[in-house]
Length: 323
Image (cartoon, rainbow, N blue to C red; front, side):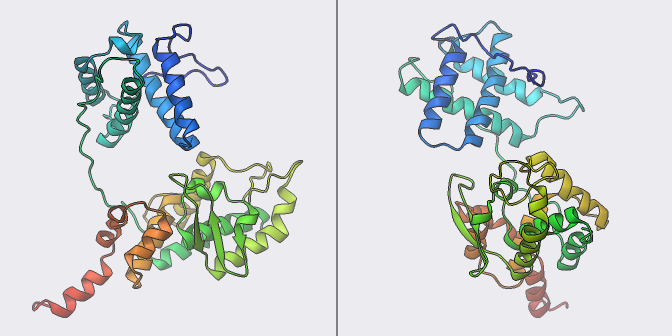
């Protein structure tokens, strides 16, 4: 896989001086996406994977979209299939799928805007994706064991407890928690507003009293001491007074999960899986779980009907003759 530029140096991908070259047209495509309110994360992701493709093309003296044919697209797809990472493992079919989607979108845009005469990517057959179950889901007692690892006798322990309680209570995504601001919480109603979640959609979620109590304690006793200079209003701050980066938040939660020694691995998303599974096992309608998780399609949520074995065990015990 082509390497990114060194840290602190913006590596130029493609020839920006060629108005019909990959780089200029890539930038125009990304600008088109931003102007149509695609999320910043989506635009950045497509830029990364288009850059991979452009670098691959440049290594083969292909610099313009007009030079790309269907056999070349097929060749790139085969290259992705045979590529091996540093650890010797291949790209997963999901990773291959993720890298091909931006290429298909880019060439569709080029064709519609008459930059090329035909779309060489129109017949891309994307890899079939496996519908995998979440590898690990915590039980109720295990979730409490993880959360209780936070040392609430220390300021940052209170913050960390509030973070994990929020994940557990709402099942929100990692970036949704990072972007939370103080005004997104409504203590009297017991709700939290997720603004511009996945797909640029807002949604309001209920949040449990236990989580709210820890958030309130953190906001009153700990957060003021973490603010340095201008306060941008983000709810959860690092000890440097900044909002969390995704990797830093992942590491923080992972360390607590590992410390609990439940035999299960994971990080922020583990609480999301756990919340959905436990609510389902306790009788929640899957449509409400879909709303909690912010899934656009019910099919995405239905994976939790397979994860939740408790109800199936109850029916099996009540109806199978060989009890």
